[in-house]
Image (cartoon, rainbow, N blue to C red):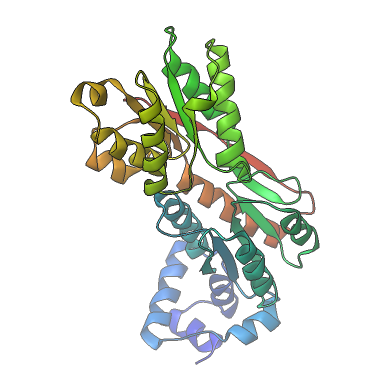
Length: 323
């Protein structure tokens, strides 16, 4: 079966079938006829022939830290939605939060070859930056700011500062903060610095005994919150760098006496829907994760098609969900 035969069956030109297969513009009426002809015949275009003809594999490599995270799942949904619409395929790999694996997989994708790479970033090292500058294919970093590549990132600092100002209010509340490694610029550094700045604006200094350093897990959040609660009997709020950590803090609070459980509030980042479903909800920051995936995929495909040389950097907003 050839493109010419598909065109004859669909009663369109061979050029229209070619545009359809390569994600170009085809009217909805013709799209439907071509789609029906392909489904009827079971036609599968030759990937090798397409690469030789168009110089594109129509494959995008996506490197993700994990898939168990609701936020990453939302990001992947956004990426997949755009790629499917443009008839690109996604090759997804998971690093289990191991930074060195990100580099290994990006090199693998670069030589596969793919047309471009989306890195859902964690820790951006000097080795990452060197790869960004030397890569043979365009790259979009998602979730972290970098001046070495195209990127789509969130306003972590602004969101954390806004959250701190809101929860501090006009009273001098006793507020604890559980953060993560500052090697993660977005979640570790920007959120912590923004939160501290917001507290200072409200006239509050975060003391060392009210600060915890957690891993990205419920269990670690539980341990850090428990340690803070045991040493401080008059806490009003425990604010956490992620909703996953916040879930652990809520578990630690369940072990406290009722009056204390009712007094201490927990806040987070991420607007985790599962946490909302199994609890009464917490004050949290909603980042537009699916939108970030959509924007990153659109940006990468535009770069592939247009060949932009100037790096593009896009910062997305946020919404504080108060409870």
